[in-house]
Length: 93
Image 1: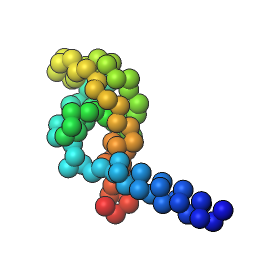
Image 2 (image 1 turned 180 degrees about the vertical axis):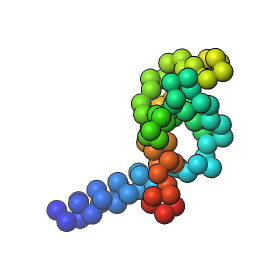
Image 3 (image 1 turned 90 degrees about the horizontal axis):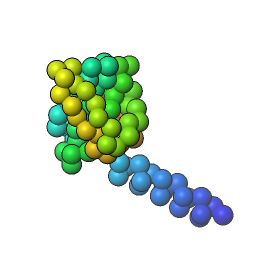
Image 4 (image 1 turned 45 degrees about the vertical axis):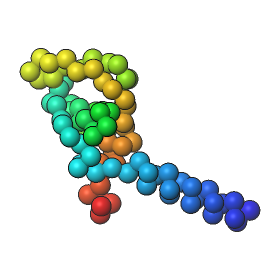
């Protein structure tokens, strides 16, 4: 039982470290008309930050409008990855 619990904990830690990101993984950010910001990662996938600085879920394929009127089609939905990047300073990374 103890070995199974230890293995589960180790697996969780390894999984979370694999999705860890920081702001250097973000190559471009666009201010949106609603006050949110869409961030584009190096691999082209995207995550959306609401006006309060929190990562939020947006459906892949949804069309977002930038402040300048440009239409941006959402690719991916990197909520956890963006949350990790936005909060890396809190964890000391």
